[in-house]
Structure formats: C-alpha cells, structure tokens
Length: 154
Image (cartoon, rainbow, N blue to C red; front, side, top):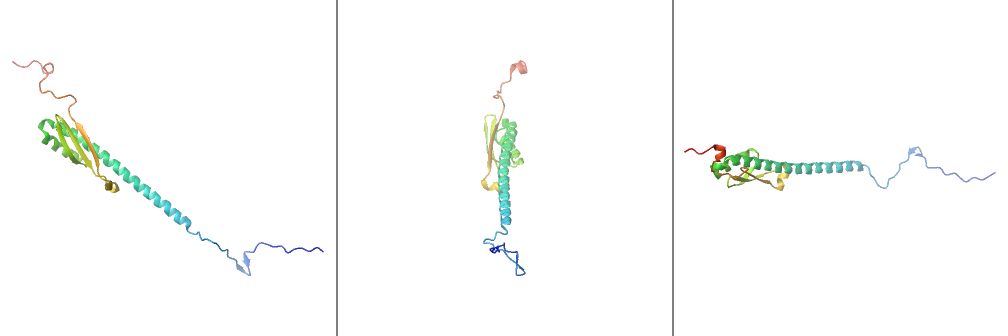
C-alpha cells in the first residue's frame, strides 16, 4: 500500500452549514458614486466658466455695436454742434444696451466711447469698453463746387 499525503482543498464556501464571509481589508463600496459626483461637479464648473466667458464676449460685441451705431447717428447731426450730435449718439447707445462715457466732435467727425456691463457671473469682472469714430469720407468744404452746381448766379 502506498501512503498518500492528505490532499488540501480550497476552503468551501460553506463551512459548518453557514456561508463563509470574506473579509476585506479596505471597503471601497460607494467609490464610483464619489467619482461620478466629482466628474459632475467639474462639468458644471466648466459650463459655468464657459457661460461667463461667453457673456463677456457678448458684452464686448454689444459695446462695439452701440459705439458704431452711436457714432453714425451722431455724425448725422455733426453740423448742428456737439450737443446735438452727442445727444443723438447717447440715445442710440442707450437703445443698444450700453452707456455713453465720452463724446467729442473733431471737425465733422464724432468720436464716442461707450461701456456695456456683462450679464450674469461675467459682470463681476467689470464692464466692456468700446469706441468708434464716424464722419464724412472726405473733408467737408463749405464752398460749392462750380462744376457740380453750375456757375454762380450773377
């Protein structure tokens, strides 16, 4: 007869009629929940930052549009003086959601500066500034052109 050594088998899941429990050294249950919450928080923060940058860009464009349109409107009244031209420019600038900060008449050219406040979180960063200049393409000459208007009456 041959002698056999006792064979060791893997422990059974059931010992003594009860289910054996496996002990863990570290409990990582709920780790995925924390990870999903962290990714969600980062996504929300990136979205808020993008929205704030977008609002600042929109405010800058709104300020430039208001300045351009205000300068064009003021140039129409440039011959009536600085008060009339700047009043017209201020009305157009305000209608475009900005505020006129400076207005000057340089000959028949009007120069306006405006500011627009961004909405939302971007408003914390400050206001958007823009300026524009408008006037005649060629220098204005008050003497009539004899070729265009014909000879002067006697």
